[in-house]
Image (cartoon, rainbow, N blue to C red; front, top):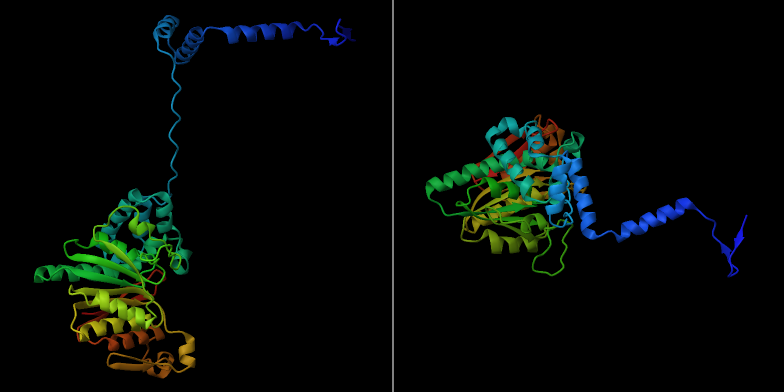
Length: 370
């Protein structure tokens, strides 16, 4: 049905429920603000279990309600907490060979857990890129520490000896440093009064003297943007494969009057020979080079054998074919043969080769010259 009004427009039908709703809405909107405040306070106190009289007193004497501040945002956290990191550290071969060093490294990792923001810490604990570390789902920092532990142990021993001998503070050069875990642990574990600077040398670092330089993809945020290190860390963009850049490194860093220790972990292919040449040149020039510690990562490329490469460093000479000559190995594998040749290339009588278990059950060879 329909009704018409005098204006010619259809009139609205009578709806009592709509009238009551509209009237109530106008009344509520017109209510004094203090009465509304009292009602809200009473409701809140009743919800907390207070009696009606207390509600009335609190409501009538309370100040105007303030808008509560929003709760602070919940910060995401990593599942790799310090306790879980320590469990992972206890499973690596270094825990057996260097238990005290692993314990101290666990304290360092706990310090980093609270020092660095989540986006940086996540880079530390992501799974290793390949190999046994990836298979066992170990954080990269744990895998890298296991491979750096023999170097760190020897550095601690040498700095203690230098202190007893009254030698001046030394510099440490970390060749092919990559992300920098060896240098970072060294900064935390070595005595700051014995080491002046630690140089992280790699072609992937941005050149800090060139605005906008991006290097090879590794940022320096974890080195420079989150507080000072106990021993200063300094990144250098140097390609170890380029002779000119190595000469510059020798001229400006290694030949510094202070004693210098050269280190290198994960030296792939012929990079170990580059490290030995840098050490030998330092010795022959009479500058302050006092030690070399390095761990070869792998053999020279297969193409070297096919092209019959000959290597000559120091007073030793060998060929790429000799590394794979089964008759001349005397029961050694190609990696062990390579290490024997590398040791002969070091121009000092005080040298040694050490081994420690790697994550995959193989041995990690460490060559020393001092």
